[in-house]
Every structure is written in C-alpha cells, then in structure tokens.
Image (cartoon, rainbow, N blue to C red):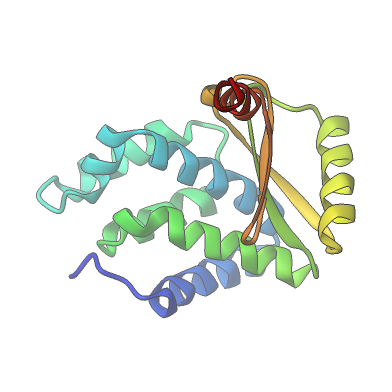
Length: 179
C-alpha cells in the first residue's frame, strides 16, 4: 500500500474515524486523545519511523501504540489508531487526525484553533484564548493546545490559514531584526 495520500483519502479515513467515535457516543474524548497522539507522533522521529515501518510486525507496532496511549485511553481510541497503522497509513496519522478534529468541530459548527504554548494552559486560560480568537476571526473557535518549549513564552495560534504569533521567540526575533 502506498504512503502517498490525497486529501480525499485522508478525509475518507477521518470521516470513518469520526463515524465510529460518534457511533460510540465518545466523540469529545476520542477527539482529544487522537489529537494528543498525532502531536506525539509528529514530535518523535523514532515513533514515526517505527509505526510507519511495514517490516516491523503488526504485534510490535500494536505494543508501541499501547505504550503510547497508556492505560487511560479509550478502547475505541486504541482501535482507531491501530486501524490506521494496520492499514499502512501511519505516516498520514497527523493529517487524518487533523481532518477528524476539523470534522468534529464542524459538527458543532466551530473551527479549530491550534495553540502552541511553552507550558500547559488551564481551562480558564483556554476559554479566554478561545474567546479572543473567536473575536479576532469572527468564528467560534475550539482551542487545541500543543506544548512546544521552543515557543519560550506566550502563544502561537493558528486558525485555518491565519497565524497569530504572540510568542516571546517571535518578539525576540523582531528585536534582533530591529537592532
């Protein structure tokens, strides 16, 4: 099976995952868990290589998935990640999950705002950020937080094609350029 994928293929997989999660009435939980898995997958070259390597036995890849998800993950989340990996689509996991998250948000008539922060944000901070992004974009935004130490401080938010960079890293870069 090829690892090349068109957006339509990613959307097909995402919609299948969406239907399964909604059918189990676990959409919100599965959405959060899959989002975390996709970000871990993107951040870890070794994980990406091992889950994408069709020469590694399926049982070994399944064990890696179990370790990655931990005991707190829903059974359906485990099954959905295993399905993607077994289908030879592990390399496209982040794209599939992003399409899934977009579909879930759209089902609530919202858009997703991915926010990168050096530290975890509490619920109140996430709510305030969602409100500010909603005002800035004119859309109802659901915030998904990605911990990214390279941000240093502040946040970088992306809603669709719009990027709002309020990071310390960005401000330092602007100061350097100004000097």
